[in-house]
Image (cartoon, one colour):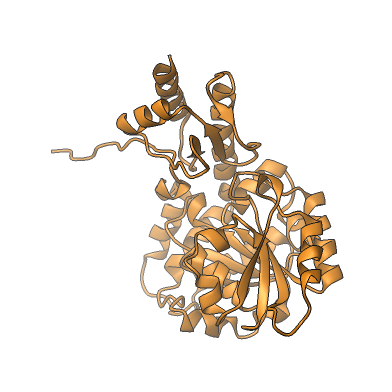
Length: 348
C-alpha cells in the first residue's frame, strides 16, 4: 500500500520547504563509510573552499545549525558586553531572536533605528552614534543589516556603500544577516562579493536552510581578525556538530554547480508572479516593493479568514490586513495560481 501523499505547498515560510535534490544527493553521498569528526573531514573543507570561491576571497568559514546561532555568535564576536549594535527596528536580530544576541554577547545592547521599506537610513547611523558619548551609554560598536530585509526589499550596491561610508566614519563594524542572501544576489544580478566585502561587510551570516537545505548556516568572516577563537564560541554555544560532514555536505551540493542561485531565482520569480496577479485586484494593496521571494499585501479581513478556512497558511503580522506570502524554493506556478484563484473567489 502506497501511503505517500502530497502536502499542499504553503506561503507562510520558506522553512516549510523540504530539502532540495542537490542538498539531498550530497547528504546521501556523505553518508558512506566513516569520516573524521568535528569538522576535520573532507566535506567540511570542500564546503568552506567553495564558499571562498563564491566570494572570491580568502575568508574564514564556520558552520552552525541555525540563523539564531549564526547571528548571535557573530554579533558577539564584534565587541564586548558594554557595546551596542545598531539595526533596523524590525530587523530579525531584534524581533525574532528571543534576546539571543544580547545573551551570547553577555549583554551587548541592540539599539533600534527607523528606515523606510525595512532598510537602514545611513544618516540615522551617525545620529545614533552622536546621540550620546558618556560612559553611561552602551558604546555603539557595529551595524547590522538584513539582506534581503524582513519586508522583502533588497539593499542595492549603492545603498550598502552608503552604509559602509557611515560605519567607517563612525568607526563601526558591519554585520550582515543573510538568511535570504541568495535571493538578494539573484534579485540584483551581481557577484556576491559586490554586496559583501567590497561594500565593507566584516561578517556575513549566509543562509542555507531557507534556500533548500535541511540545516546549517555559514558564518563568513571577511575581516579575518574578528574570527579569532570563533570556534570556541561555537563549541561553548553547542554549535560544534560532531558529525560536521552532514552539515557541510549540502553546501557542496548547493554551491558546486550554482544550485543555490537557481533555487533563489525561482523563488523570486514565483513571488513576482504572485505580485503580478494580485496587483490587478483593487482589493489587494501591495505594502512594500517586492524585490526578493516574499510579497506583503493588504487584503480584506473576510478574504484572510476565508483563506485560512480553505487551509492556506501565511503570516499576518504587518498591521491589520497585512499578509506575508513567502515563496520557498519548491513553490510551483500552479501553487501560486491556486492561491490567486482562492483570493479572487473570496473577493468576488
